[in-house]
Length: 404
Image (cartoon, rainbow, N blue to C red; front, side, top):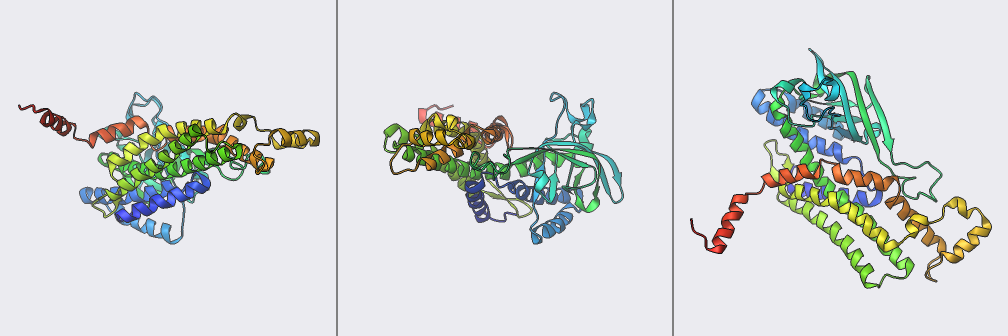
């Protein structure tokens, strides 16, 4: 839990470093959920006289002492998007409380696109939107073991089958796992419930999670772009074009992207605000500006990487093709570039580039960069609320000499 600006900077550095090695660290959402719940439970208690914050701290202490991991279950399946939760023909389109007992609650519904859920110890669950009084049953937040009775995971992954390291040097070792979670009357003990009906705090909890999560997205986007930058530079070197001006310009564009994301993250951490619970929240404006930039940036970064590397990114021969000895000799001859670079080094690099920019991993991250941690449009709206546009208009009137 980040209790200072320096903590947020350290988190940025940690996430960037881990992303440089595996692209997705998966543990970020659990950490951000800890921060979000520490903020919201305290504020609910102050208004409602509940004991959520005490419950949360007891859970967090055990969580940290035992080095547990957690996913964050936020996104509801939502059904008809034009209808509010209580208006849905099927109320299970938003996760809800179906029974309140003296020792806990029973929940039913589903959550979608939950990163890392099947490989985590715990799953934090919270509303995905602002809830109104009529949506009280949907204003629920809790933590549940990933193997709880009545909880089903439907998993999709970018993982390539083991034993395919020659063709898929990255995705045969690293991947993400995304789940649909089905809650079929899952019982949640009272000590694990952190919101139950306090609908007026649903937006606060959403913001308390999305802001630090978008802040971490700046770090991981920087780390992923570092990978693409290094791969582009090495491809240029192996092809013998590292000193060509337009190639160097494209690599510099990648460098600027990566460092811009990181700089915005550091700025958001430095300008963070202390909440009532003592937990620090990254600067909302700079965090959401960064979210918009990263949503656009990865598409361009992959395009630049492919442009630098060339068509071999798509056509590099597979390891199966190399099993034909007669073909292997000619492939080594015709895929040779610089004399100082063994052909197999070049082939292995381009299989890595193919794995990273044309196959399942690329598709996964292109979608994640666009809509992960919320939509770019939503981030724009939040950022716009943080800016005093009237003050900027007054500035121009002063510069123009307009007096009213």
